Image (cartoon, rainbow, N blue to C red; front, side, top):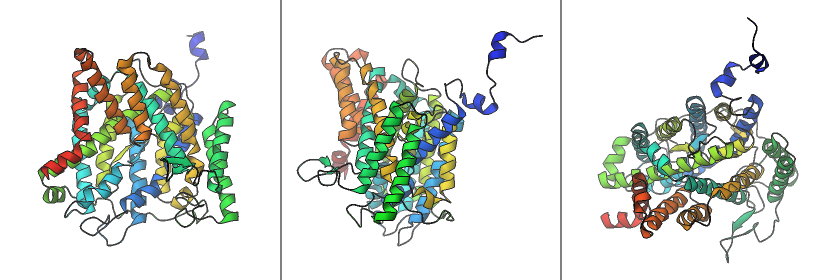
Length: 485
């Protein structure tokens, strides 16, 4: 029997294409590979930064992660890359969503500078708190509560979350590249002294301009090409100027020094499994433990919500209500990642907004995650090669993606104050407070307060009430701790 004309013209689709729905989402395998590469380079800094944050102080017990008297930076770096790789691949396979996972910035600082500093606590005990937080948040997903809260958020408030995150990651890019820095008379200033006077900032500017020009000219892989060009330039600049790290030279590179120190290094996985739930109960007591778990949980809960909305909006993956496909699967993997991060001794792992850089370069499916995750796993052996890419070469992608996400601001009804004021607070507080959670919390609470003030309390979804009350408690955690000791 002859084939119909329509079936004869249909393009052949291989198993990879069908499994990840690549053609269905308007993408190609090459596009997904590019997007995965861009996401990895945009967030690979965590392999270097997470060990530095987690080793910023010894615990109150006087030990570092792994129980030693000295920081084990190599072990934490290898475990950071391993857990990020495994959980990013899991997100791709289970949820088919182009959102990578790694140790959460902010969450790791809370673990180091708050939880691990409580009387008698070791890092193993602190990681036990992280594991408990992950278990609780997984239960909330499996019972449907976390997904229900997400779907209760008004669509325009979700748009505001996406726009706010766009500004936030643009600011992250500018700050990490030291294009803007803290100042004595103002919160921020241009460059290190009011001018763009260092070679690393020059590399950032070149990378940003290359990304902008290529994007305007609609060149495929614009962001990845810009990262590669900026990295090559950085290597040349370092080989001539020997600038070193900013810690040793004010005009040096911020974190990674772009030079080759070999390619291969055997990974040290000694920190895996360094957690103790029993110790957390023993040293904290029930009330303090509940407060610690709650503070980690709320940040993790809503950071992921904002991130997956922003990524979905950037990639055109959201439905009419602003929900991504397979929301529950996304949240399950993210919750398991929190447990895995604690059990791996590297703090809670969560969704990374830097994934938007890969989506901005074409990623639309979980295949991009497979690429990103595989590179993280490879990085456990090739950490010297990963370290060649400095912040200044990777962060232009974040600024460009921030612009792309900002374009969604037109979807907010600005003349309707009942939604536009909460949206405005959500948008501005993410970059100004340097916190996705703070922005979402301000938007939620102000939305409920305004609806009550205009006599429309019945229009507020019950779960928005619950979330807003939780945010009020979250914002007041320090006074609560002081009251209960």
